[in-house]
Length: 114
Length: 112
Image (tube, rainbow over all chains, first blue to last red; front, side, top):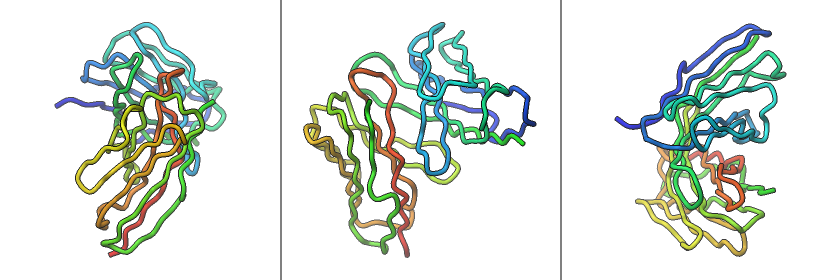
């Protein structure tokens, strides 16, 4: 069954702790993305990767880090430097490159930091 | 920088009504526009993708149109049902940047 998996669905952390969100895809897609969604804000791009071992900052990269060691995996670390980490995080993937193509999303991880 | 706007932000209609959701974008240099549906607490489900060379796409009761030169798209939902209640988002992929740029969405409620 092809798709994008994100784990866990809910995550709770204390302020000051780093936390890593998992994203795995078996669609053989080259490109992967992380978005953050807050009420009334829409989706904002955090980081994206168009190929293994390469990634670019999105609009709100401060306080986040990523790695892309495998084509299937694009984990996101929310560091203690992120001022307002509580949000709904969405991972996506696509074939990548130039041209028109669909982007697909995972089910999301809701992170709560207290 | 590409900006995507969706109007209205929220819409409530009685069951059976036909309705139109609007999406506008500022930079017409796009590869495609994609419409998504999002249920509360869930990820996004792709509904329709329109390539920049196309004028419309249809899937069941959904029809999306694209007027690239004026920077506008509409999503038409025919004979709305309570199960259509969700947030609908549009997003564009520009030729200058790979990731999709999203509007803030229209929250639709279909009342039985």
